[in-house]
Image 1 (cartoon, helix red, strand yellow):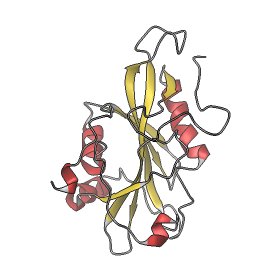
Image 2 (cartoon, rainbow, N blue to C red; image 1 turned 90 degrees about the horizontal axis):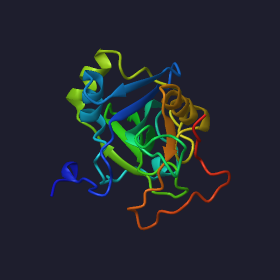
Image 3 (tube, helix red, strand yellow; image 1 turned 30 degrees about the horizontal axis):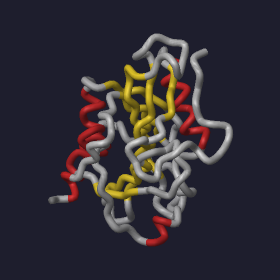
Amino acid sequence: MDQAQVQDPRRDIPDLALVVTADTGRTEAWHSGEPSFGRLWTLLQPTYAGTERVPQEWEAGRYPAVRITVVWGLTGVGGWPRTSRAPGGDVAVEREDQLFVAGDGTPWVRTDPAPEVADDDIRWHRVPLPVFTRMERAGLLGGVGGDTGAGAGKGTPAPVWWAAAGLAVGAGGTLLIRRGAGRREAGPPREEPRQELIDL
């Protein structure tokens, strides 16, 4: 089977994309059914569960500057007993993708399939160049966010991640952190406090 067709059947299908542009810090919410969401879906392939080999320095966090960070969410979940809200009013975090461009111009995605779990499960894959080119020309992918080597360990820096989380809460929903129950190595976060926002 082609790697591009590898999908993880244990994951729910996201219907919300919280997009943080690295060079400006601008945060937007794109919803399923919107043209921008569809183009982003085609570009990043958020149901893709495979990985491709990358240079060792990338694995160590020394990769090109991040262009955008996308936190994929699933709406219409939650409710009692996790929150005091009626069922279906919450947003669950499903995945985090970071897009950057290698020195040869190839667009890559660095994926954390369970950003709330303290593990080292980071995956990489190249994305379709024609889709990337169209989105870049439309100004949807930001500019170069810094110098090569801007990567810093696992996931997005906390201020960026929580900016996206704040947008979800501000849109009228409570943000729930899923523990990726379908993953064998999944479990509660090892660091306190637990990363969960309760309905305000």
